[in-house]
Amino acid sequence: MAGLTLEVRWRGEGLAFDGTSGERTIVLDGDAQAGVSPVEAVAHGLAGCMAIDVVDILQKGRMPLRGLSARLEAERAPAPPKRVVAVKLHFTVEGDVPADRVQRAIDLSHETYCSVWHSLRQDIAFDCTFDVVP
Image (cartoon, rainbow, N blue to C red; front, side, top):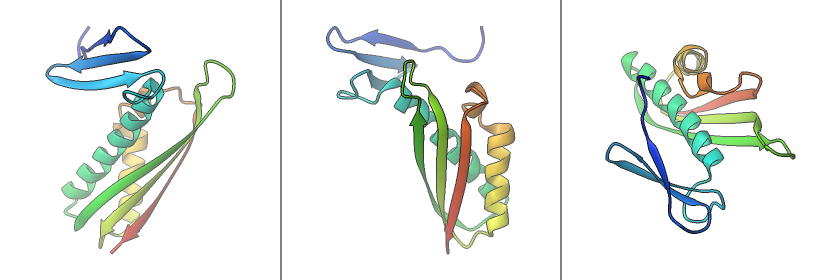
């Protein structure tokens, strides 16, 4: 299998695990105490993946981008497995970037480039908005 290799190792107490991928580490915790929960890690991955795509696309388009942040809110099903059923992702783009260029970058990420989104169930309700702060 090509592409991605990582390992998680139980810390020996509670539900905390150390995750490693090469030399990089993350703490995952089912109780969300010592680290982020696995679902939070997936949500971070989705927000981060799309944010990276949007920055990359805007920079390649030579847009005057000064900053970008993303806020993700997810709704989870009430019963186990309590999967994510809806995501709201809002970008704040800093710089004199035309709104149509931001929307196009978001659309390209969501429809084509974001490998995290395309690794998730496609029946998750997804709403993405943005603000441009010149």
